[in-house]
Image (cartoon, rainbow, N blue to C red; front, side, top):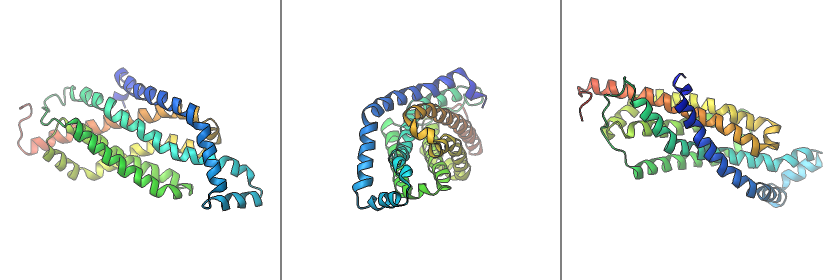
Length: 262
């Protein structure tokens, strides 16, 4: 928490937020209304959803029918926007956070034992994100159940955060054998940390999913909430970096590896 208040950390949370905000602002400008029209057409004319529209009209719930299209679009965009920010943070801010932590006195003697290649890092992130997206798409129908919208996102983001953060922290400081050993030994603490970070990230997600104002002003509200996500990711990077670098130090001490060797 103290590290999060460092001016450099605040900048590293603002930079990806501004970059993602600009990209999605442009996309919203061109795609928001066309996307809503396409969803409305699908709801009204698709054999999968037309019966829902007829039932709502017959029961006098036309008001709910009117917000179905924006609600569906918001539900689909929330994971996409969040994942895009996580990827950008992972490849821009997280390395800077790790370098900042590794330069502190307690971790300076952790020599760079292994250079994780960029291609390998991209492949690892791609596979992790692909699995996460598949899980999101498979479970999307049950997101409509009120408890699930507050339960599933922390689990998914927690698992993805654990995978990406752990790899990024250890890729440039541990050998493959050390990374595998640490991931195996600390699997449950790391997963718990990821879920707790996911719960922090679920706060803006819950606001998005339950507030009518968030749906009406989604293009504006989303930019404000993105910064909250960015801060959570930087906090996650700091937490994982401190935890794993300390675990790496203990691991090498237990195995008789002289710290500071190269």
